[in-house]
Image 1 (cartoon, rainbow, N blue to C red):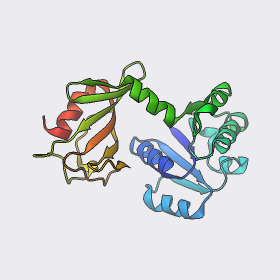
Image 2: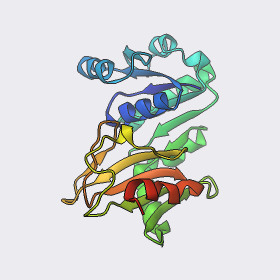
Image 3: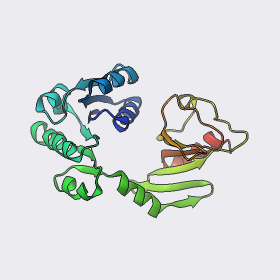
Image 4: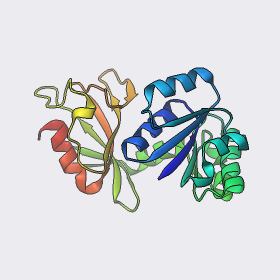
Amino acid sequence: MYIVVNGGGKVASYLARTLLESGNDVALIEKRADVVEKLVQELPDRALVIQGDGCDVSFQDDAGVSRADVFVAVTGDDDDNLVACQLAKVAFGVPRAVSRVNNPKNEHIFNALGIEAISSTTIISRMIEEEATVGDIRTLATLRKGNMAIVEIELPEDRCVVCNRPVSELALPPNCVLVAVVRGNDDAETVHGGTLLGPGDTVIAFTSVESERVLKKVLTGI
């Protein structure tokens, strides 16, 4: 697929890297020159990074929104995200527009305009409501009618088989992505290829349900 992302912050950067690693083609539109420079340095060369305003038709045109399968807006401004998604749909006919929504009260506006709204606040609340534990794998949420899940796995304090190894070297099962890690001091960070896991860390992963047990064995050796 070809995906255009409006925004260049941590969410956009992680999303772009994940999509690229999955074999997709990605373009990013970002206003800030320093952020653009950082993206160019951090992302693979095949990522197209454009400095400009994602709410401007000319920059969306430069990013190739007319041939995009998905347009994603993940800036910290709901108004900008809404305008950018509407522009992509109306001016370029993008088949699917997805937007980060910072204020959950705005979700209904996006949905009414045919934009898939994703609110982290709403997701977290659903995760809390749906929390369930099976064995020592905690399922925080199930998606797509149970085919995919967000799970939490705690690494052992001793005999940790994956500790001090970059995540990129781990033999993770198919359809599985490590999303975040929570350290012993409750500090959470986004996982990337160079992340080193440590004893007692709690790993948050997005995985197919059938791969949960394999993932647990890879991370814990049990």
